[in-house]
Length: 141
Length: 112
Image (tube, rainbow over all chains, first blue to last red; front, side, top):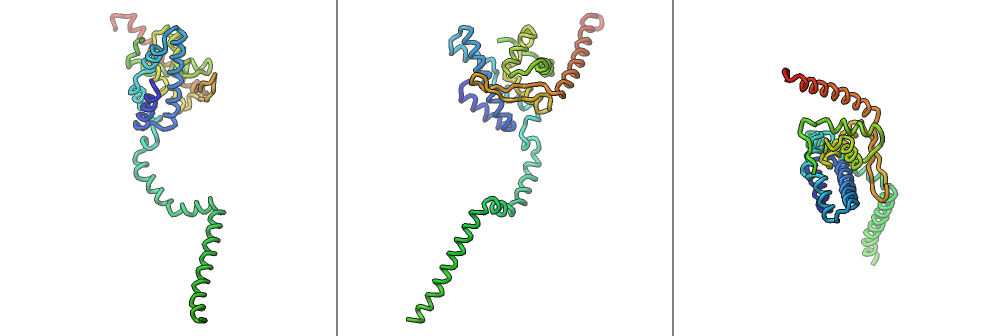
């Protein structure tokens, strides 16, 4: 299996609904396992190409690995395990939390918000004073 | 390539993995090799298929895992938890029961 094959396997696992943390770890384990088989075959006197071929065969068909992961519901992502929750309740709770987002952002970035507020206030004062001075200067000239 | 095992073997990989991990912590490749040698190559698993079993056992609290870098390689080592030991005992008893039943059926051909 080449790097591209592992990437394809990773994509297939995610598409099959396997939880990302299991996918990440599984791919790491399979890569290491593949490398271990190659090392063992090289140590047994095979050339690299044959060792890689043997490693790929022994690791198994990627489709079988995906199917084996899918056979355990506990390894699926929560969206796959609770589709109703993901489709209805999750978006609704996000919608309900939406008005609170500016408040959270404001709290998290309080110094920047304070700076911007002072700048806006200052800019407003300058604009207002100029607007007041303009008719005054017309009247006086 | 060794022949893989038929569907009636389902549950056996779990029993073997728990049994091996009861002795010491191991990583996937080590486990596959140990199963092969411990069973005299009678049981040969599709090597990549062992990981779903390990992940599932860990998810159910029977195993614990930790990452360790050995010689520049990242290994995920698994160990048995007390819950895993209970599961192993249960599966072992179940296996002995089934094995006894099959042996007795095979030894008395009149009833087989």
